[in-house]
Image (tube, rainbow, N blue to C red; front, side):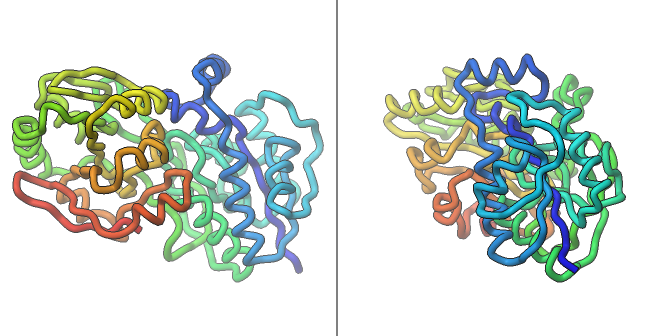
Length: 370
């Protein structure tokens, strides 16, 4: 019997990333993203995943109508049956929950959704553990352990499950802990567990906490780097608590979840957008991007720092990327590799390979970017 795939796309997911917003939940945030020039990207990433799936399995596809799934399935060259209802210009969390509930009632074997943590929460709220789910990474933040490491990886994992019935495992659905953020910490809150296809590779882990034992070494490294960085070089700092240590060593806090730019020891752009970064690079003599790997996941780009876009990375160059991460955080990665998901497959391939990660003054660990 042919297996059935359900598809949901959150068409606004991830729009806020490049324009410096921390998500796209809510009508007011979406309006702000559009005003800043944000462009939809969920459908294109869903198409990438569905095309990879179509190369590896034949299945029946049932999709939410219009921009919520049907359009992406058709663009990927797959035939599909659309759920009842009309496609609307603006969708909501309620639309996602309704679509997921209808796919559950229709008896699909897997729900493949394109979105971020908010979308994962909505799908989980509608189906619980009654049907397995898998996320195509599309949001600004993706702390949950239900997403593929890239759109193609999500397509591969979904195809393998539909083709072979590879079994299921529990995975945590997480989202940003707003209370911790108000205390100056980046932490993820657990909202529940979902069932996802068992896969040896291709599915990201949930975001992990900071590891004890790294703080003193990172503080010492921050003080040393603050003394040694050339004054005429543009420094683009990624988000998170590790890079905040570096910024504090230079005399300012910066933006915890944003991208900050420093020149000659002075903050010249806080919470910068992609466009602001490109404008600064147009005038810069040279630039370095300083990022940390996400705990538990190992992502350098594509998770919460989409302002550092493929174009920004090309302008700066791989040789001018500095990774600063605690040794214990690196040791805890399983598998012990780093990831990038810039939205540009060619650039991701060019970024792959080994990179030295600064862990303490005079100490580096060689890590592979998968």
